[in-house]
Image (cartoon, rainbow, N blue to C red; front, side, top):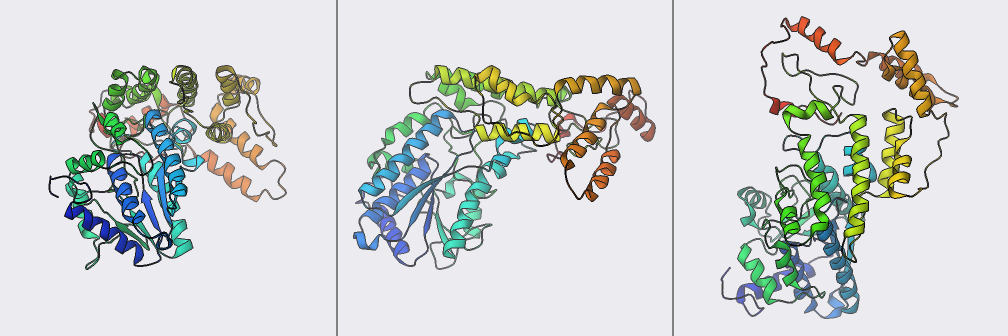
Length: 489
């Protein structure tokens, strides 16, 4: 586009407005507009709004859904900005008779970041094991889109994607382009089509448009400039496929992101006066330290979640599995403490909730049913740190206690039986207690005995005999490859 201003009189911009109206009126397919609160999605939504508001009210009949994806671990400042923006969009749409409704999509509780990290013990995301994007961003957005497809047959997605973002993005946009149409096919969703009104905008043109055109819903676009200042220029878009960048090095990423070495954006916000965010940065840095190859064994179990043990290549080096139960307890305790800190120190109107009550309930369930947490740690930590009692689910089956665990440890040690094995067997029996049909119990017990229950030193010694090397045998693979085969199980 030209650089001579984008004030509505510009021929190119006027043509974009005409395109928006033409595509909107051409069929009955509803639109889903991806809105992240960043510069690109804001520009796309403003263009859509401005173009359609010029239509007579009776022609503005087709529904437009503005959706924003909340990972539940968004940087609090950005999360608050998006919430306020969605409220303003919804209010202005009613006042100005626009066919726009807003939705904020979130991951299912069982797929959330804290449930996976603390509940299941998934290691902090890395470049080799980035388990977060699919669960936290892609699936919630796609579920919403699929529900609209099921209701209407087809939908048009309006995204603030630009070909200048990257060569990969430009290639994908070109690959799925429909000949003779301004729409593209979605790369993975059937019956979903993509319209990118700012596909040929440069970054400068995006900022020019925002600063020369007021927000229809009452935001001050200069606030966006302030949010981007002293930070990375990227934004976290509505991620609906794996070709869309998933933040990482941008301001609009998750505050727990460990895909990059340093969270420069968070550091910049703290340097700019948001000191109350410091505990979040420290927690994020603590997670990042668990990825240091030499320290992984401090935090990670040598067994995978399946109960099996894997070795690296033809070496005696064990591939680390999930975080240990003890470390997960520390992670939850620290998280609850910093939630108290940030809610105390945050500016008026912020008071972020770092972990949802539903996530605490799910973590407790996982710890009790899958990880042998007989002391029932979650309610105790919530009570001691937050000073609250949640409406905890009463356990119908026989519940074991911390005292039971101590007694079991003593008995197992005396008889040279792995405590974890007995806990597993007792949990299997507890889960089936009271059932009339128990035919599956024997199968589960047999499977439990097939798991690896030996101590680490015994396993390593057996491995060394198997591969024919001594304790100082040569390592055939780099520490940096330890993460590669781990898939969360």
